[in-house]
Length: 420
Ligand SMILES: *Cc1c(COP(=O)(O)O)cnc(C)c1O
Image 1 (cartoon, rainbow, N blue to C red):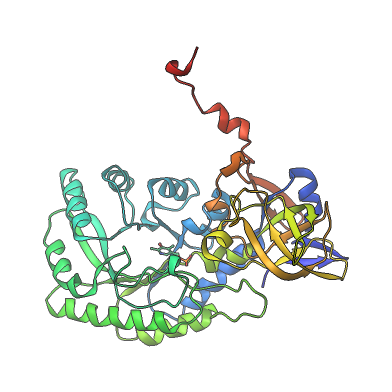
Image 2: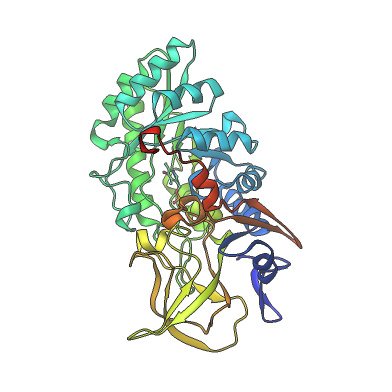
C-alpha cells in the first residue's frame, strides 16, 4: 500500500499533485511520501512484535536521505551502516549511537576508531582479521568493542547474482565451517565482547525458503558455539525481504516473514536483530521524469525521458523492472522502449513495454524507486545530481538539492603544470 494515487486524472503523492512538484523543482526528481514511509516502518516493526526480544536497525544504504532516516528512526529503528559516512548520517538524524550496527566488508582502521569513539551498539565482523584489528584498537583506547560475527551460510538466495551475498564464493562473512573456531579465538581477545552471530544472504528475496534455511543453519552453529562454552546472546538475521516492483508479482509480507522467524528461532533464547532496507523504503518513493521526445524506432518507438541510469541505476545494474506510469494518463496505451539521454546502451529502463501513452513534455514516474535509487545516483555524463522531495499531507519540501554540474566543476582544479 502506498500514497501515490490518481485523483481527478492526475497522479498525487499524498495530497500534492506531482505536476506541482515538477513545476517548482524541475525533473528528474525523487518524491517520497512520509506517510507511506512511516507506515512501512510501523508495519514491519509491529509484525516482529510476536518475537520475545528484538531490535531493528534500518539499513541506511537503501535510502540514506537525512529526512528519510529521521522518519524511520521515529518509528523506533536503529541504523545499520556500512561506512563512516552512513554512521554520521544516522547520528545526525538522531539515531542513538547505541542503536547503530556497523556492517561492511572493508571497515578501515579510521572508520573503526570513529565508531568506537562514537560508542556504537555493535560491529558486525566480516573476518577474523578485522576482529583482531578492532579488538586491538579498542583495547588501546581502554574500550570494549561489542560485536557479532557475520557468517556466510552458503545458501542460494535465489535473487539476482549481483545482490546475492550468502554463497560460499561471495566476499561476505566467514566460512560456515570455520566460524566456530574464529568465534572461540576472537572471544578470548582483550577489547572484544563477541556476543553473537550475523547473517545476510542477499536482497530482493522473493521466497522465504532460503532465509529459513540460512536461519536454521545459524541456529545449529549457535548451539555448537554454546556447547563449547561461549555465550551467544544476540543473533542478527540481516535484511533482504523483497518488494513488488511489477504490478501482480507476489512478495512475502512482513507478517509471513515474522511468522517464519518465530518458527525457526523458537528455542534460541536470544535478542534477535534485523536490518531491513528495501522493504522499508522501496514503495515510498517514485522518480518523477519528463518525456524529452518520442523517437521513431525500427520495432517500437523510443520514449526518451530526462531521467537516466545515473539517477536510477537499478535497471542498468540488475536488469531491474520499475513500473512506468503517466502523471496524467489519457487512457490509451502504447508499446515502447523507455530510455534515458546517457551515451550507453545500458541506459535503458524498458524494452517493448506496454505503457501509458505519452508524448513530448508529458510527466511520468518510475514507481518503487525509494530504495537503491537516489543513493546510487552519480553525475555521469556531467549531469546534475538528482534532487529529492518529501511530501507530508498537503505540504512538501526539497530534502536534497539538485547539485548542478557547475558546482561539481567548481570543485575541480587545473594544476600549475597545465597552465600556460
Ligand atoms: C544491504 C544490507 C541490508 C539491507 O538489505 P535489504 O535487501 O535492503 O533489506 C542489510 N544488512 C546488510 C549487511 C546489508 O549489506
